[in-house]
Amino acid sequence: MEITLKKKDNKGFAIASKDGKKAGAMTYSRASKELIIIDHTEVEDTFKGQGVGKQLLYKIVAMARENDVKIIPLCPFANAMFKKNEDIQDVLKK
Image (tube, rainbow, N blue to C red; front, side, top):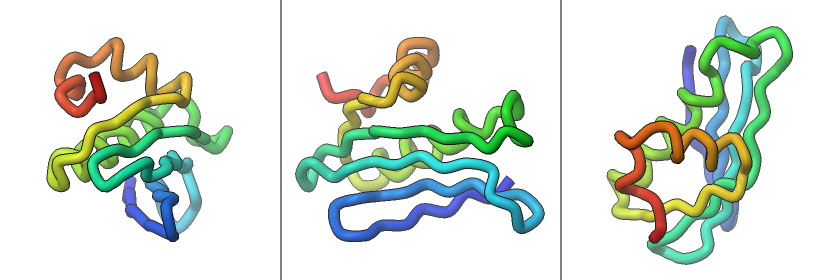
């Protein structure tokens, strides 16, 4: 699974692909220099149940750590993942 990060204006995208096919995407909005809001996660039907959403989230978490950015997870999937996985809660906006 390959995950790439892209930015356009105040939006960011983590895009997962495997063998040249799009597997899923997670989008976020930049609220400020120090804060992003994850607003949507989408996984293609053929890739469901393969951990694509989690890999997308962890890629964004890694980017947030590198840039000293906090995250607000408005997306229900991302929110649930933050509640379940203590190892990524350090980037949550409190």
